[in-house]
Image (tube, rainbow, N blue to C red; front, side):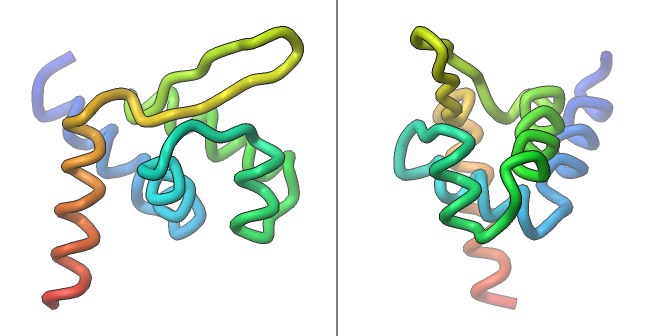
Length: 92
């Protein structure tokens, strides 16, 4: 996969309002799918679909603790990407 392909995957992952909202919430720290669903006002199955897409895009990581799954941003570069996208939206 080329650098351009990875960039396209990341931007495609953020291209939906619910996904961007999820990623912005995860900027505050890891959360479970049920917490994310309640925060964005979506059904848990829809949130699970968005989380799969965000993991596949390389933006999130998943951690299992017992029966619970926790999601967080993959790394600090992902946090900076979200910050820059939000800054761009504010300024334009």
